[in-house]
Image (tube, rainbow, N blue to C red; front, side, top):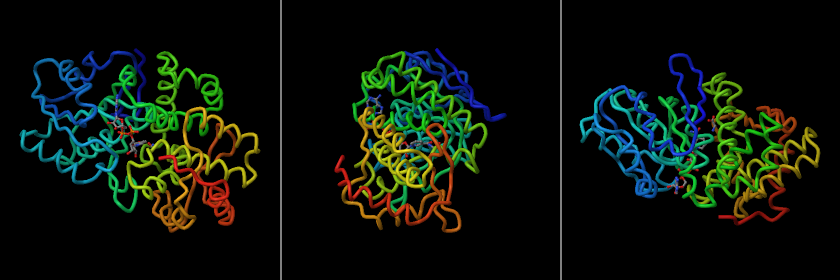
Length: 366
Ligand code: NAD
Ligand code: GLY
């Protein structure tokens, strides 16, 4: 087992990464009370709930709430379902919520924990690659609003993150690819050497080779932990983790949540951010080709959906959380391995990037 620490003073917490961790009860020493509410969904619970419950052993009141599966259910109604169950089962302020599932369950469980009785503990047990490398670490929690992705939420850090890499064996292939989008992101924004490693090992990752998966998850969590420790509430460097996300969130909201997977939208969005970085003269065409090749090798879309106009993008990007005083800020690449958040790009170049998808013929990926 490998262990990392997210260094946030008295809210610091460990990330455990390894095979078979689901059965080891590692979260027990991070549960402060006697009540536990496991939040999962209809897909993940039949696969892993019993094992998680068994790993907790005796000594806890363990209750469960099983939500419907899908990004379209990442909303306040489901948060209320969690509150209903917590109140019905008489959970008090010492309760711990455990998120067993992907990023949707993790984000919603964390948000419910942030709000219930003004804040209770929670633990992340992420079961998708995307949630293992990104969403379970860093304390961003929340739900979607029809007008914008993740618009309602709170920062609330978990007590620990338990990453059992063997659960990825049951993950559908499309979801594995979606997770790789966030892994590639870390290479592009922060670590050119890791990007090269990913290029060399993409076949192994696609075929879920255990050691390569652990290495990719470890480095991704390491980068995320470093960034979050420096800027927990995203007043600076943390925004870099949103490479491709402003375009991607617009795609997700436009297509209807759940149609394009988050990671797929980030894949196409990363290509758009790369295209704009090139138009600004910051990176050469060879780098654009390299980004396209690694995204394609990870089986991700590189072109936005063909039913989105430039105006659709502009309207949806206008509500992005990085907009300040009406000014859109984007994460762009200075070089491969180094990104910046900037509002300093000519509107005409952004228009060219948005139009480029149409010229290429947008994809109807999902
Ligand atoms: P998801 O939670 O919808 O999971 C994807 C699918 O895989 C679901 O159908 C799920 O039931 C299924 N699944 C999960 N684990 C499985 C397993 N082991 N075997 C078989 N099926 C399994 O999607 P996701 O990609 O994990 O997360 C996407 C969400 O994460 C988005 O809402 C996004 O906004 C959010 N997100 C949050 C952060 C953050 O920092 N909080 C970062 C990135 C993404
Ligand atoms: N996924 C972006 C962040 O956690 O900041």
